Image (cartoon, rainbow, N blue to C red):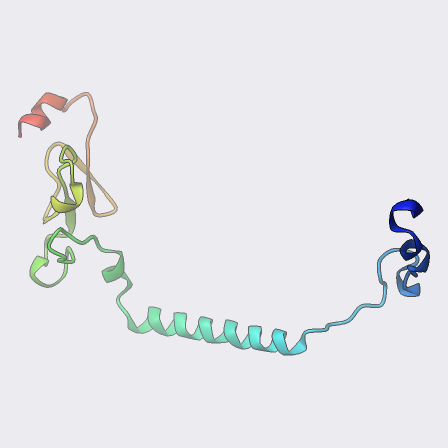
Length: 128
């Protein structure tokens, strides 16, 4: 090992604090960063609390149809579900707000999803 590194290895000295392994006397070195981080957390918590108290969270969770209408709001009041043609090549251009899901669909989080059950045959759903 001395051949490769030569005198550099012999000149290296270990810090006496680390001679027995890990440093036992440690302290906080980034007090300013800790303070900035705590201020950031308090600000984010305050902003989040304000937004939940004053805003309409359900509006942001509601589905949006192909014309950018929010289902259940404005002109789409009463039409809370988004139904789309699953067999279409571009399902995002077929989304439509409806008041209830059709016979070949079941509702999942305000979306009408295609049903695959023994009572509804696939051929009946395709012919609709």
